[in-house]
Image (cartoon, rainbow over all chains, first blue to last red; front, side, top):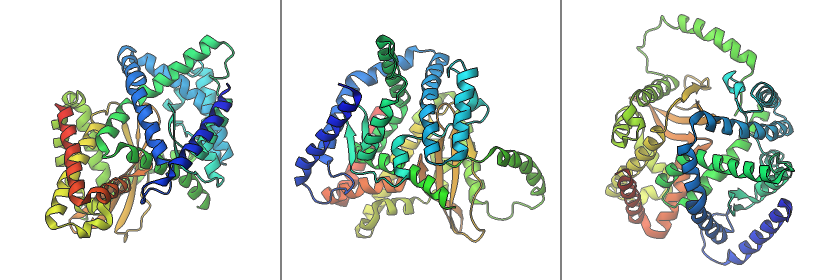
Length: 234
Length: 212
């Protein structure tokens, strides 16, 4: 199965699960009609994370020397700058696009393929942007909140954006399968290791982790999109 | 997310020293501005944590004491709690209001300290304040820079007789009070105000046990 068809199946499954789960509880958040499904998906993710990804990420954090971790982070960050550049361009953010493109150029050419982040040293900071955000910028509504298996919090719109981006993913596009799989796994572990602190803060801050995560995710997405629209008005 | 242009940045670099020299003359007699207050307190706290190895090693009691003495005096905690509890606040007895404040404060100091103890090589950068001198409510915008993406950190402040007070905090585009309002109303709808107090207390006990 291609990633695309996986995504399509997921969306279908999610939509149906949501429809069947719609019967209960008044006073539910209108942005989250699939709450029962999402909750069970989140607890599935948490179990999986606790059993596999988190322990691996902790070991990775503890055994990897700092410079190496920075290099790994920089490398994947540089790859993500490709998509960010395209998306800031599609959101007509001229200055952010120029800076993102400069970052990409400098880091790829002079930073050994992105292992060094010399652009940040030059005060050229990244403006992350993704396709879901671009869709939002052009007025596509977020749609219902959706917790995806393994990938976590999302919305229907962002899932769509993600599936489009996955087709252009530079790591997933590699022909050499062992390299592709290793890089894919390394990226997942690196990402999770970066979130270790955040997830421990989240654990301590929330009364109900599910609704807390949902609130944080939705407000963050919304405010990032609104900031761009607001900028256009000024 | 707006980023200033290079030329603007250059201009700022040149103008700030000139302005600072010019501003040297007027005395500090007036009330400290909201941006100056945030800048002073945040820098002080960050520098203290950076300079103290035991705080970075996770001495939570010490970090919490720092937050308590440096930051909390500049926070209007009653307003913060009241707006997080929302419409239920008026239904709460004075005793319940007091308990809500105590438990919520413990929770926030604890989580804030947890985040603070992770500070290593980060630095703060402030955006220029966009407010009229007559404004009594302002937003001070800043960014924490370090490894990885810059983290947006904004503060809402109100002018009180004793100076400016913080009443809400925005981390990465998420307002704290709003986030807790959903949590709180969910709990109150299910278990009432006492239920919320109990669940806050339970959360705090669990956090404390983890701190060891």
